[in-house]
Image 1 (cartoon, helix red, strand yellow):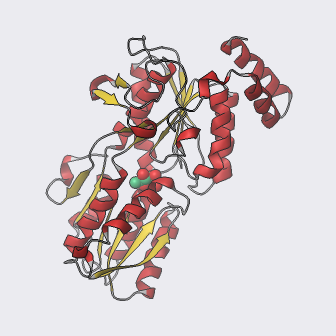
Image 2: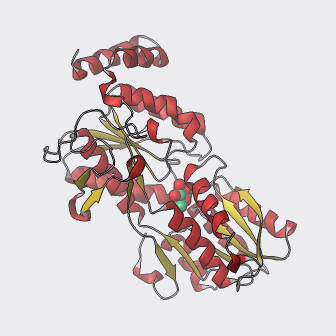
Length: 361
Ligand code: RAM
């Protein structure tokens, strides 16, 4: 059965029976060729044709961790813009909470049922999503993770914001400078299951093992679940529990903003240092009022754009997700797929009082 015919009959089946059953049935009937695992990632067995024409009229579904998060709004708009330019369609679905894991799984199943050509997913919890993503790939859908990855066998490629190692280490370096390499520090993270934050935190811990940080001590990692109120309360809790705290690293745009808000209205303003990953528009006020010295981020719109362009290149057969393949991402230039199907956007930017007004996102 040709893939298009198969997908049409799968949709009919999905409306006639329960979605889970339909997806299982459809998955079983598809050729395994599309999803054979090679070199760790779910790269297709077929050969990439770098000269293949980019297909038009595709539909790419974006599924962020959380839809009402300004970071994802900017990222997904970047994806939408690129798809429009490429003559394809964009749609966005997703939960409103960054801990609604089962909600994210349902959205993957919905996109599969709707027969999108590709989906770009930021994983809340890689373990929970894997089965649904594999099912999508079995149905011929290309799966790109962006921002937060799954394991390589559950997607065709991962569009990474920057090297995870660079991000983890530089956040420790930024904070160390601000506190004079001395004192207790804490981390305020997003959800406990988030792959991106957890990878960065592992590199932070590794960086802290170096001799120059011997007088710094990580006392706690708290989780604000990318919820403004919970992140605010967790910051308050950290300072109650550790009154000698000298600094906080928050590797989440929601967390760093809430922590800055708490510190800026407290006696700790300017005394307890705060750094991490934030957007210039969220953080401008706190840099200008002396709560925050410096923090970093990549351009989320470019991340979304690269995810969209990767999805279209996969759907067009220009790439399969294998290490060493290259493709042109429009005005963003040429990208090469790295180990385990990872495509890295580039280096993050550090923002401080001197440069923050040059950025608007
Ligand atoms: C939040 C999310 C996202 C992360 C950024 C830095 O918006 O947790 O996954 O990449 O922060």
